[in-house]
Length: 607
Image (tube, rainbow, N blue to C red):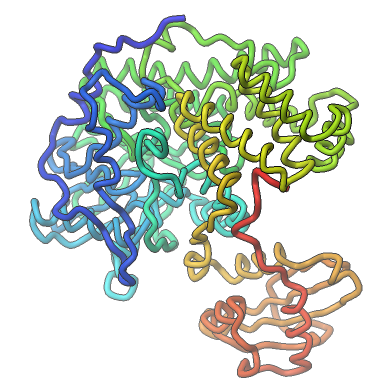
């Protein structure tokens, strides 16, 4: 199998090209004094000469981490600049007639404000005259309050692809607790920064830990070819739903001859299904949209950039890059289905699939963030689901019960650990981890099982080319040794942007069904500042709702008149006593009493 040329320095030259200024300070802090971003976290990546790597990091991943560690203001094209290394993602700034347009304002208010300040220190105190959000992932919109004040900048357009708000809410609120907990693993948030711990995420170093927010778009992009001019800057958009995000778009800046590929073409193999969880993406349409971008835009651009990594300059290099990225996703899709139709399961296909040597020879096709292994399984899942077709898979015991039976078959947990240790000593770390998972789930307090599994996870992590696999292994090892670490959940800070329908949806997904089985409640919600009226019903443990048009035939058990701010406060746990109402307020209290509170710190490597 071909591998990239280790002497190839083109990516390093591209990553350093256009550098204007580095960070003015070594840390970005929040208002309460917390460190939201620390530039010194990546200093260890300069500890070895180029071409060398620590024994605890895959050499290809070490190279990628060094490339992602660059921080500062860079010029991409005349009037197009990027602030890189201030968060997991990059902020792009496009200079207009009267101010500057911000593309993808990072994750946190604090890092976004610091990135904008760096730009202004070099280019002048230009006002923000527009915000473009390329897609519905937190690292591309969360820092919006660092560049816009909703009260003072109400007339500044916020441009996003159609469906952006709906999908941002579905990902970051509805399943937000579970995704963030799993994201804590694949982001390596609690790992020490260094060769034995966090060296990055492949896509960037890591996520900032400041304050995210969510604002709705004021202008939707609905179709490919849509052209908009904002502050004198012309955009030609390409809609790419179902690719890296369910709502995403690329755009060409024709007057700058610059093409933004959002997160659809970056310098790594991306995820068809990210390890934190998400909707399964469509590798087939992903490849087709990359092909469409190549046909529509490549001739009109001299530079290609994205919201992660470094630009690609020159027509030939751009065409090669887009062609290889296109063929990467198309090949994974088509070969997975070819083998599935021969009877192989997703797990089997992940073991036997072979990548073309011509693709493997390119650095940007390597799995620093996604992997061939878990992407193949995701493609299989998209078409065929969780069931592998074997009847024994239909009704397996859950993990803890399965584990107890494995331990019994092996002669107890001690024997199971001994068997696993033998496999580990022979170099079969994968099966050692499988056996040790059963040992820990069968007897969670067994110190030998926990420590041995932690050691195996550590060895697997230190050998992984994929940064997110590495982080999952190392966080799992740490949790086994030290216990569950606290996960900082940010979803609550996004609630203010939700519509009333979405807020009521967020109630529905925390109703404890068994506790609510025998309840039948109706509640009317009159949200005065939005002039909206909704009826919600709790029956058979299910909470459903709809808009009211006119007066309902049957009165509700309780009718609540409140503002959206009061509704938010109520859902955050504030006492409902002062809410204006007619009917029985006890009905509202009964509803609130059957709502569960999500657990942001649930165990992952133990039952």
